[in-house]
Amino acid sequence: MASLLFCGPKLAACGLVLSIWGVIMLAMLGIFFTTHSAVLIEDVPFTEEDFKGEALQNIYKLYNQVGYNCFIAAVLYVGIGFLSFCQVRLNKRKEYLVH
Image 1 (cartoon, helix red, strand yellow):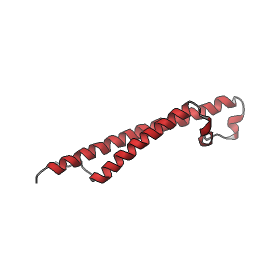
Image 2 (cartoon, helix red, strand yellow):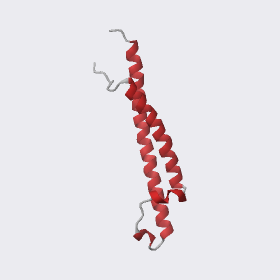
Image 3 (cartoon, one colour):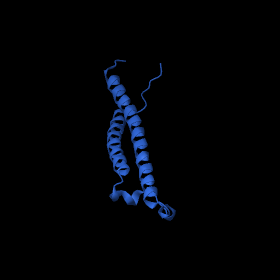
Image 4 (cartoon, helix red, strand yellow):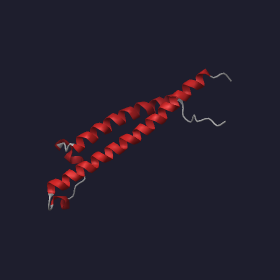
C-alpha cells in the first residue's frame, strides 16, 4: 500500500503554522477591503480611467474585487492547512508504528 506521507514532521508543522497565519491575515484583509478601508487605497489597482464617470462606484468595485481575491486566497490556505494537518497526524502515527 502506498503511503500518503510526503513531508517530514517539521515541514508539516511549519506549513500548518503558516497556513493558520495566512488564513487569519487574508481574512482580515478581505474584511477591510470589502468595507472600503481608506488605509488600503494604495493596494487597489486603479487606473485613470476608473476616475471617469462614476468614480466612487468604480473604486468601490475594485475594493470589492481585491477583497474577494483575499477571501479566495484564504480558502486556498485552509486547504493547505488541512493538508499540513493530515501530514502532522501521519507523522505522529508513523512514530508509533513498529517495523
